Image 1 (cartoon, rainbow, N blue to C red):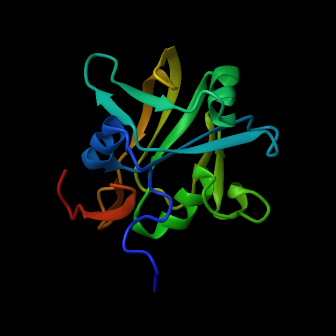
Image 2: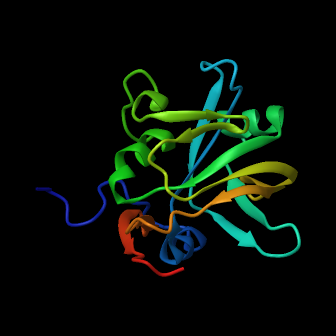
Length: 178
């Protein structure tokens, strides 16, 4: 139930670029990085602004918050894990985005497996390990280019990829297609 017919804190003059971005929508990923020898030295961030560039060395181009702990950890270690989130991971996405409470921190909200690239969400069926190739400032974000090292695609599950569109969660029923 709500008492508002629109967003209660909506900007009177909304930014057209932000509105355009919200209509594009995309898959929700969780980026994690950290020192595998020190489970307290890890960081993560929910990321939806990204694309995959194919080629001899496939890469991901992503927009990260320049002030995020994940961005700092990626710079320090030079590597991370990128995992595709699914519909049941909505609360985890909110926790790593910093928009929902996460008692004990977001890494306490799910099980993670330590890898040499950082923690990997144990339930993630589709994920990749990546290494930092370059970065530059774009708008209010840091655009990072990361090379895809190892890629795992879960062919057996009926993944329901978590999407973000116009400020809301949505689900993509992927089924058994490649």
